[in-house]
Length: 418
Image (cartoon, rainbow, N blue to C red; front, side, top):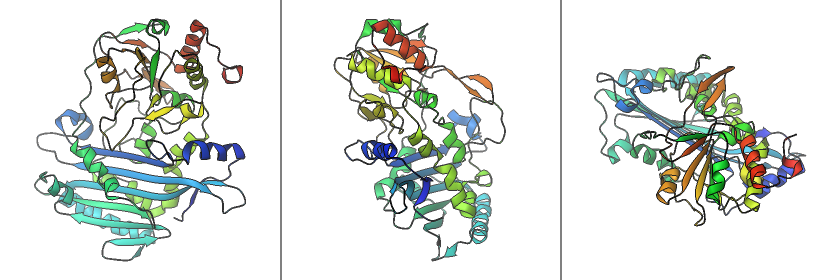
């Protein structure tokens, strides 16, 4: 694989301007040209169904951490959006016999993929370097005084573009996430249901927290697309399920195999989320929020979990809260806000809604509480609404446009649906 890797072969002037205004600049709470994801999957009684935990089978672990830097390449006659740098870290802990077989397979894939050995544990191909390191006891487990199950060992496989500087803080990040422990789901209370957002008019002004719902409406893939791309969960059929089993067995972990055999082909899949996010356009829902903000009914920045910047591209200030360096990030609540409108966000992972309630804000949810896959509808209830909260079970666009109508707020015709 050679870098820069083309993600979009040709950008027009407006796309270059979008990149320069929203993605390339500094001054954000996180660099927007960086795409990053972390999954740590462990066996625990609380996730027994997904992890396969039992009294006799426990202790497996798999960590995947990626961090990519994108940019614009001007060396061709037309500007291109490219993947400029790549860091992909995987670590698997499993019974020794499985790790031994996995290590043999990795060496076979290195040979088949045409990688050139450059050291005892390092190989090179094109602009990528890969390090393969076995551990009887992982150094991170030693540091954390975390016992290794009897008969277990681990194998780390790290892909890194040749000159990418990955700081110690970045390398440490997935282990800090692991140390935070398994997330315990919220216990749902007894929220009320409403046909529309009319009640929100009694709690103005409000602030907004956005999950992937508005992005999905804009054509951006949902989060489980990344779960599939990075082989985080088993998904070998088109069966509708609430959850899929974790990939914890080295024999079922094909991510490393795909990268070693053809990293260029795999890069097409791994860059899809960023490419589609960049090409997406703000929807009427985003423009309705902008109109409500301009009218003074919505205050403060959008508390944003998505990196597609669609709200910012509609003219709204964003504050990104889906962070790995802070388990509970600070949230800039507007002191005038009397309510929090949560749009298309399944769980309160960053405790934004909990903190809003503690401030005396009423919490409203705008969510379909379901999804369609393989032409079938599957209920997907919100995880943590509480007594006193209100849910409007609908898509964002029609409900936000209706709220604008109820409040006498005009959405510019150019941004309203036909």
